[in-house]
Amino acid sequence: MKRDMRKVIKKIILISFIIFILIYTIPFPINRQLDAVEIKIDDPSYLDKRKIHISGTYRFNLFADNTFRGQISVTEYELTSEKMAEVEFVKSADNGGILEYKYEIGTDEAGRPLTKEYLFGRVFLNPRYRNIVIMLYEQYETEDGGYGGRFDSKSGYCIISSVDDREGALKVLEIYGILPH
Image 1 (cartoon, one colour):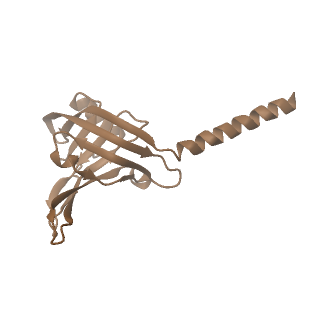
Image 2: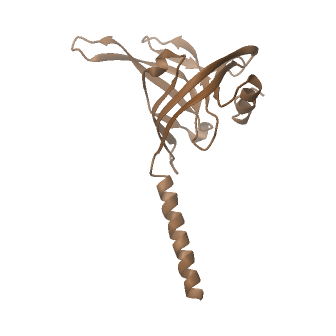
Image 3: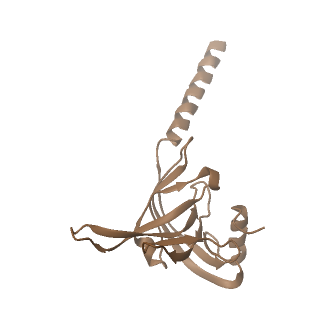
């Protein structure tokens, strides 16, 4: 009887270990279209409806940062339909990642494409959570003609999925620790 119990326990441990390894080695496909709202933190009257499209794979990493490969676009922002860089969700920075897009501005003398980078904002995306948050960067042009950006936590814009109103959006921002204290 004790031997049978030990075999069962060993099998359970082995199966648990295999499942654990699979979770951290197999990327999870994501293909979703989400309704969202855009708010301005310091303007209670500002509320616009948005659509977020996500298509790609999310990979959990046990010892490194989680990553997303694919495309995250917001219909109302045309530049988000350009080629997107891989997003690393930095564990030491609240699991947020930078949304960076590359777009063509022409070609060089040899016919190779010339590209610029556009930092759209910071995204918080985790397949285990219902809401996706994009903190929109205030844009500025860099010396090389590209675009940089930064987020203003007192007056910035945010896009929040799966909420219908400002109050719901503010609750999600509070959960993520984005609102100023």
